[in-house]
Length: 287
Image (tube, rainbow, N blue to C red; front, side, top):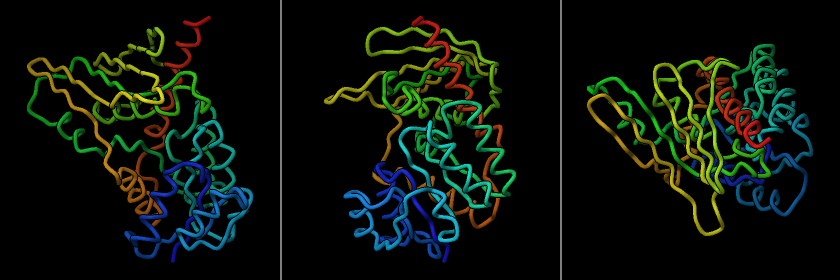
């Protein structure tokens, strides 16, 4: 039995992962076995729902008790400190989006994974929605422009645009065929008007527009992508079903079984490099 520990249990994604593993048994041989964060009302509820006995204080306390870990902490700025000691010790880790909120932190996570010989997985659920296949179908002329729209708040307490904006970026890169975006290579024009941030850049040979709309208590803009080809325009809402976290868990289970990360470090770094370029441009625009 491969045992999985959970970090960042305040995130509702943890409920999904524990349900898939313990309640529904979707991955035989894998089980949620530990929670990080100490005893709390939230962790007690998760422990009861999942039949989990072990609750520890710190991520490092998982070492020796579990075989893999899932980090779902809402603020990606904390992911490096939580992932590094586990990866360095050889433990596979799924870092729920985003991998990190800075290039330096993302590179440190990848370096720890390499040093420890441990697979690391990180991905947006939007990469797996069925509409992506419609947007990447063959038989159309060259792609000239791609627009991705969705909710994200530059003033979020969870590192601003990174909390939800990483979805825009990962969806765009998936549609574009996952080109490598090296840190510091993107020029970004950005503007902010009230609750709306618009960023224009060029990735490969395609103009890419990201529109981030801050959600309110009563409204949330749906994720949407529009691909403009030389002979067609394809527009799709990107819909997340009730089991939208299932593909990420399946990817992680496969990585644990194989002992290999499913994508390269450069591919994992590219979304972070892209969103850092956008947030840096936004910061300069506001000065």
